[in-house]
Length: 141
Image 1: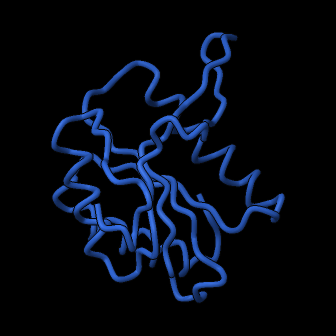
Image 2 (image 1 turned 135 degrees about the vertical axis):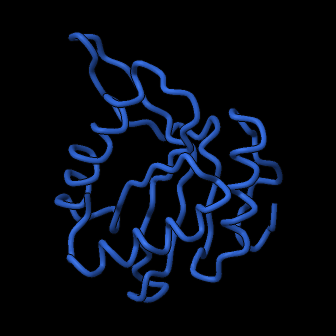
């Protein structure tokens, strides 16, 4: 990894080459100020399936200068999805529709958004399009 963008020296890839490709793309994006692979950092999002509590560990946390300046970065929770696991829809829906709005409403941890990609080779365009979309509507998913 590039030490200017990621303070962790290696990206632990759960999905083989997919997460490594995403890390490469994040490092080459000028608007990405820094990022980290969320491996054993303790950042989890709680969710429930069939009345059972679980913890979701998103793949990346990406801090993006989305035009608000470096003092007001967008914290993007980025999930790299390959296989369609039964719990995937519940955990990503919870992150997108409950956790992100809640943390943004709280207002003390900066601005947050959530994006899921299944195309690591196009993730740069996806992130740029997604950030443009949320800035255009002025809200977060």
